[in-house]
Length: 79
Image (tube, rainbow, N blue to C red):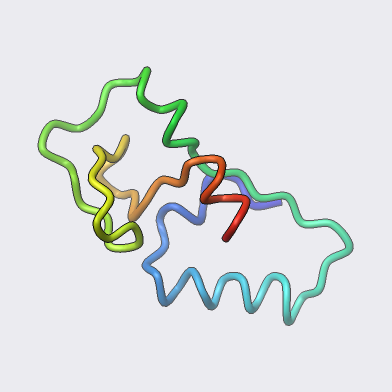
């Protein structure tokens, strides 16, 4: 189980994360949760926080300043 972790990882670390958890460890079941950007619009966002180096060219406010990105449901399904 990995709950609310991946959104805190830089792109290079995120790639390693998948390689380790799915490649090296090879669990029978692996549950991952991450904030849903579409749902998060109902929450307060950080004023002026628009950075996202994983989602270049897609502007949105991150819910927390320590997030590197926040996926939509469709983006998460295709990652």
